[in-house]
Amino acid sequence: MSATLNMSGIAERYASALYDLADDQRMIDGVANDLAGLNKALAASPDFQTLIRSPLISREDQARAIEAILAKGGASDLIRRFLLVVVDHRRLPALPAIIAAFQKILADRRGHVSATVTSAQPLSSTQLSALRSAFKEGLGRDVDMETHVDESLIGGLVVKIGSRMIDASVKTKLQNLQVAMKEVG
Image 1: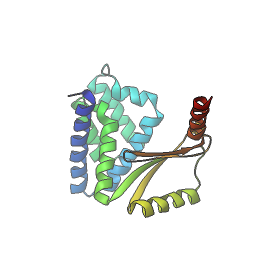
Image 2 (image 1 turned 30 degrees about the horizontal axis):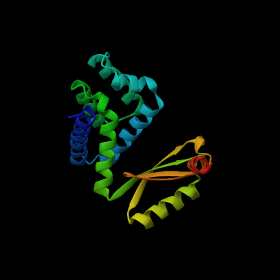
Image 3 (image 1 turned 180 degrees about the horizontal axis):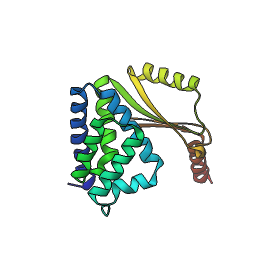
Image 4 (image 1 turned 90 degrees about the vertical axis):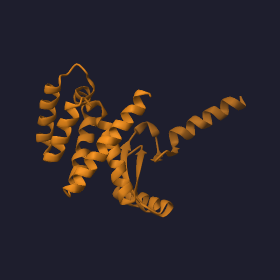
């Protein structure tokens, strides 16, 4: 079995256990918010990424760092205890996959679909509302949207829903035009 498949299975098991614990304690929304905050911190901090990935950092140092990060972010005791178990079992490198698996479980149980929308410029609240409405109409389900900005797109959007991707960016259109012109010439 490949390491990716193994990590995916581990992440799903840990996420499922966390979901069950959060559900038992009626803390699903709080846990989801804590995990979203951790995900943002991971994306913003190369040091945090090194902390979770490096096999050279001891469990004790990882645990102390995680405790400090969670205390600063005001995370719940459930998340604190859960992450200390993850650290103790040396599964911290799976944290991003655990967060993603938890979010997927939550979305599935709530009947939501997750979408990632990347645009060349930040989208206005009116544009976000229009996208949500279009997604709901097209999919028949509520959509949890995560937005990103990538100025290299020049204009347009790249939307990923599940395994489907719709690339309506100016950058891709220009690349396609360039390929077509090379084929003609």
